[in-house]
Length: 191
Ligand SMILES: [Fe+2]
Image 1 (spheres, protein in one colour):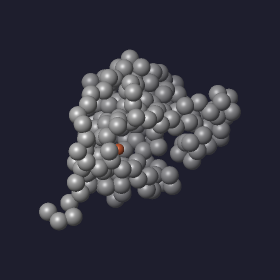
Image 2 (tube, protein in one colour):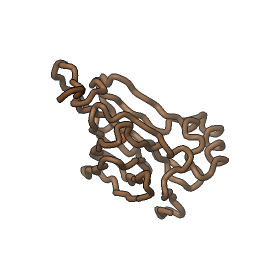
Image 3 (cartoon, protein in one colour):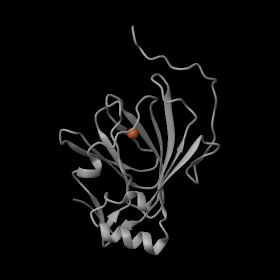
């Protein structure tokens, strides 16, 4: 097929996960998002500023990336570790993203914790799936996705996605997701 991208020939390899800590040993890179990176994403901006000031801008979530080229035909994988907490009464969450190549899906296998995968399409559709240990969430092509931690321990997932998927924050910074997740008096509310 003309102009079909061709993946590099790389050597097979294995990696060791730490399932208790929610980490990939010897990962290519660890990306940490701090509370200050989340400005503009929560409903209560002032509550986020109070959290940053009181707790010294804590790490909000971490991603341990695999040493796989970002190419068509490769299968990227990572560990996502989202810490527990509240901004006001809104549960800690990731920014969320579309894939730059929007025709690509992703699977999230929850290893630890409890939460929700919030999903939306650019056309305004909205969906969610629960995270629990051993539960796999399938994110089809076209769906933006955001993890939310509804418990008191880290939410840890193994993510697998096409190598060329990429990230696109699109309308999320400005429009967010149609639903937010709150914990009020110990009860989870999706509003
Ligand atoms: Fe993704």
